[in-house]
Image 1 (tube, rainbow, N blue to C red):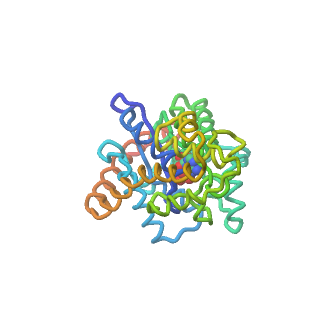
Image 2 (image 1 turned 30 degrees about the horizontal axis):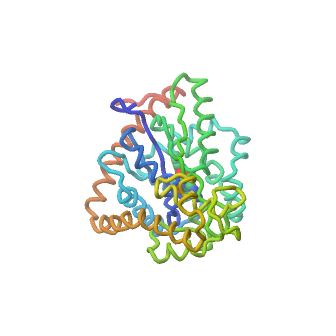
Image 3 (image 1 turned 45 degrees about the vertical axis):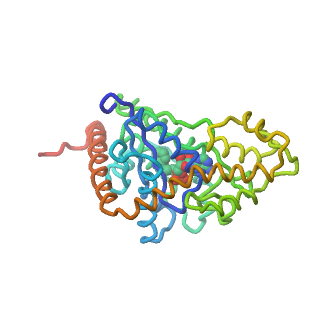
Length: 334
Ligand code: TYM
C-alpha cells in the first residue's frame, strides 16, 4: 500500500512498433485502473536487450514509448512512468531472485521456447532468465495487481511462485501479485493468420495494426484481414478471423460480442471490416495527435523522466534493502 492505495505495476518492451494488441491488451486497461491504484508503468528497456538492438534505435524507441504512455492518457504526475534501466534495483533484485528460481521452471516458459526458436543464433542467458527480471520488476514495488495480455500469464505465475517460495523462507516480504485482464482485447490475433498472436515482430506488416499507422493504412489492413467464406459476423471459434475482428471492435467500442453480432446481422464482411477499422481509428487518432504534440516538448518529457526515476528508485530501494537484510547481506554503514 502507498497512501492507502493498492499498488499496480506493468511494463512494455521498447522493441519494435507497438501494435493494437499492446494497446487493447494492456495500455487501455492501465488507463481505467490508474485512479484506483498507485501505479508504476515502466518502459522495460533492460528486457529489450535479450534480443540484439541497435543502440540509437533502442534509445529512440524507449523515449517514444514513454511519451506514448502519456499520450494515451496516463497522467505522469499521478502515475510513475519511468525507464527500467534508471532504477538499478531491478537488476539487483533479479540477481537475488535468480537464486530462488529453478532451471526446471524456466525450461517450461513458452515465450523462451518461441524466442529461442526465432533467434537461434543468440540464445543468451538473459533470454532464459527474462522471467526472473520480470518477477523482480513486479515484486520490487510490492505490486498487488499486474494488468497484462494473455501471453504474459505464465510469467505472472512464475512470479507468484518465486515470491511464495521466498516468503516461505524469510517471512512475509513480498506481496503476491494478481494478474488483471480486461473483458475484451487480452488476446488479439494476427490479421493475416488468426492462429498467431498479433506481434510487434511479425515480418508481414499487414498482420498488425501499429499504433502509429495512419487512418488509410488501418482501414486498408482491416479490409485485407484474413477471414472465411461463411459471410456472417459471428463470435465463435470456427471463425477465428471474424472472432478476432469482433474482439477488436468490442475492445474499441465497449460493445459486447452479442451486440456486435446483432448490429451486423445480415450484413457482409465488406461492411463489417471497414467498421472495425473506423472503430480503431477513432481510438488511435487522438493518441497519435497527442503523441506528436508531446514529442515537441523535450523539457517537459525530460522533467518527467527525472522526477519519476527518483520516485521509482525510492520505492524500489525500500523493498531491496528489506530483502538484502533478510538474506544476510551486511548492513550499510551511514
Ligand atoms: P510486451 O512488451 O511484449 O507487451 C506489452 C503488453 O502488451 C500485451 N500484448 C498483447 N495483449 C493482447 N493481444 C496481443 N496480441 C498482445 N501482444 C502484447 C502483453 O501481454 C503485455 O501486457 N514481458 C513483458 C513486459 C514486462 C512486464 C513486466 C509486464 C516486463 N516486465 C512486468 C508486466 C509486468 C512483455 O514483453 O510485454
